[in-house]
Image (cartoon, rainbow, N blue to C red; front, side, top):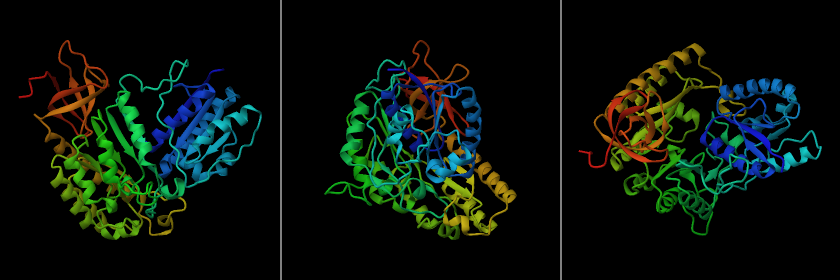
Length: 460
């Protein structure tokens, strides 16, 4: 079989990272081998995100560059997949006629057939963007990097993997395009999820992250068995997989966060004490306009319960600054929420209109300069809080899974709270990627920790 080179550029979320991995697997039987150089690749796929306008703009900018690469390499095939493909459809090919394929979020499994049709001489393929209610997930299979074969095992030291448990979203938050670009909620069968987790752990994976647009509603919209399994029950089943050291999940909507799920943090030993719980605003008026279906008071009650069940839990959040109609009073409420919860970290962004969403037609936009100033205030204070939070780990001993060598002779890994930890190894005991080591924390920054690798028996 003739070998061909494949370059996938992934934008946005972890869901897209997993989809890109699946695309690699699907194309390997056709002879496509992943390469780092986009300019000379035989096939370039942009797996896109449109949650924010900036991400979409980056896609079109990169497509402009790729036009130049294709002029020098006329045989190059160009594909756009993901949310921008789902949203823009035919407009992509109208604006960028050098694009050969447009593939929506639930049609990536058609990519091999589309390539085969192009190889047979067919041109002008129509976009594949149906949002059907079926769910396909390719079981994990590591793509061989030497081009000789595919291997059933993850690459050496590849200790963590994503496992998709559901697709789509039914919440219709007024600012969000996900229900429009990824469709309605569809839950994956429990048996398929457990089979994939077992396979990965048997192959040496130590950490699994369960993925979905709103994992808290797993199994509720389309029960996947006669005896429906909710997300808390699924967590318990996955947690019981022999050999699984760490379990995480993302993303969650506070309105669906049950007490049963929160108790899992106290009951499941391998469920990491780290939780990303997007709040989006500290103003009840803005939350109502966002259609989030919870209040600040309800959110704070759940934060209190989480910390009661797991006192060492590290909490993160998302925040949208400058939503239409946001007043200085609304923003002050957001700052009060930040002071009350004192998140370990947050992702915060200026609001941008997304096509087809209800918020785009609300009117009463916040001035861009005001948005920028508010975002700066929020981020500056979050950085101060993050530093204070990280200093709470000083003199603590954390288990760190090694990710590789960092800078200045240090190694780098992650704690169970998802902190990046830089450490100096014990002399003559160089660690390997995927090893679990104990690190005594002696330095704390805004976004990472640092310490010393300690030998067994030196934990006192």
